[in-house]
Length: 614
Image 1: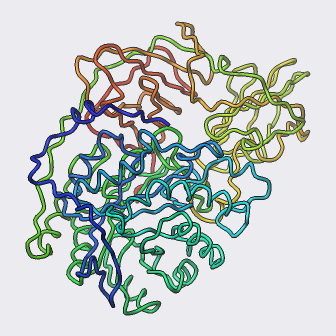
Image 2: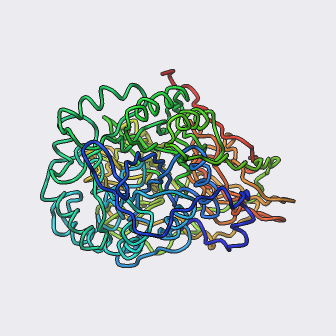
């Protein structure tokens, strides 16, 4: 995992202290959320859920409490989170709930900060996350059909959900914990209508001891509601900013005399590479909240604080073409990527204050420390990607990443060319970004977003043909998620002749210790390193505008992807990943040069060169 456990001392040192008197913890006594007509009832009293979404892997653990305190200061009474299967079971049968993956600690912290909790264990979670939270090893199971009643999938999902149950069952409301709701699957009506599958998911949750009030969450359309719900389970609807009235009018055609709730009130939106950054109005967001509160309707802000999809965890959509997500998950949320209060936060807070129950107050938001500015850092060392090549896997035809038993990162496909040739190289399907090289010299690229399949190349006699393929994130929403295998899918042909005899090298890039850096000049994709001194640490944004396309590591931590096409031009770097004194930064770039510089800036930069205005 890319976020380390941090000592309690460092945890407290990075937080802004608050007077104990304004921290209103949830009492550790049994709580029961039920439905009575159109109202939620908590412990027998009417209760409006004012929830906000925040995900523990997207926020460094020392900042959990700070962000939760700000959510309380916004007027929220509940925190909602997904549970991330592909992080907790990244290797089949090996479960991890430590450090930044300590789900129980996250929920306990919410309780200490006066927040009830909604859990969404999946097994599918969408959330613009690599393959919707499914671990990549599922694709190694022959013939598996995810999000279906396929026993192979259900057995794997049930084993995972059982482990989640071990973590969170003691924290259910009935046991004195803060968990009052749990979601069955996630927006299944946007995918299918298999009630056998949906009931199987509910049963695996029950068998795991996640015995609380259940709900389903779908778009308000009748097809989505009919497909994604169960008759004896609460149903809520998801929609974006605007007038909520038609959304709930549509819901009323499906069910009446039940509590109304917006399970995901999209108060912002996410970004794909090559698009403009999405921004939505603070007043518009607050107006929707007011419309709901004035009618006693519950809501969950998606997102209250988005954070960052560190490492290789951003997902993708497929809407006529492949659409990979950026690493930032700012989402134009009330709390920005660095956890700072925004005008949207203040607008929503002012509305919530108008509708607080008698006797309830909300605290002031803790202040956020200033971010760190880091002067220009110059790269003076480089290392060839060939240093990371291990023993190849050989096959007559190219194999997918999953067949090579690789999860994330890069894959190098290599074959030999005997006679000098020039012509068209065709790759049936390179998923998702391929760099074509002859003897290490780049010849061209193939971008899945643009459905590119051919490139003109010149191959000298007795040359090596390399195709370096980057997995930019498995599709996390829609029908294409069922078959989004990575690497080279199909054949590679040159001049109409299918090429055979491939060496394939897996490059997960989770360990760079084998790299030997020097001041030599590299051609083509390579790693570049620099060192910089800090007199103090703080959060910062690494400005990547001088870079091309690739990834950044700071002191060994993978910050995520960069790409000059935007919109994301910075990578958030939490203070605990920096240190006083010497720091190391490593960049992998397809097209870079020694002497280039980067810097640390205090605010995110979103620029999309050449993008059409929306």
